Length: 257
Image (cartoon, rainbow, N blue to C red; front, top):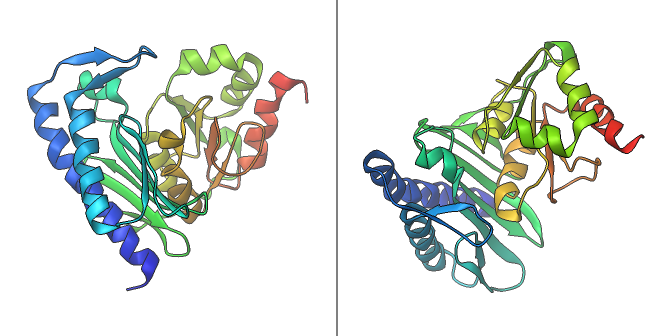
């Protein structure tokens, strides 16, 4: 097994461990608190991150770890795990099965391993650089749709996205065949698996985005910020690759470009 294949296996096992912590609380319900930024957090978020941190520290001593709930533990300066124990806590709280655990490994600042584990949906997408992308262990690839009028576009929040990018978002949605709010990380799984062509988020933290990058790109898709800057940043446009230029062109209408 290659080094990256081994690290991908570790990431998958870490995500499965998170699911073992999360799903009993999904079934029974758990108290919700508001963080300083007014986003929700639950015992499931915290307990899952702690379990994954302990697992990764044991499996990969010397690697750094950054998590949404407990911040950064420095490592060797080259390898850093980036964790979001529950991406979509609002969905989790309201029993909408689109939430998931996101786990990425950065090497020299670039995500090279990614896992999107949608526990309630029973689907886990994963990828490592040069090894391809997988859904529940089987290879996946983005769709071959090459016209916006035949494309499905999704976003986490229709209202928020429209408010932040009114002209560009309206232009894109009007050109696409179908628009749906399959939000949180599940929308990116949909693109990687060829079920949708475009997924948008106008604001993303590193723990929201890092795991998505390897999954989308290894599935053959395009991944950039809204202005077209490649890689992981503060916003995300994920596509089937073929339509990436057309999507960015529509979104640029807000900037008058």
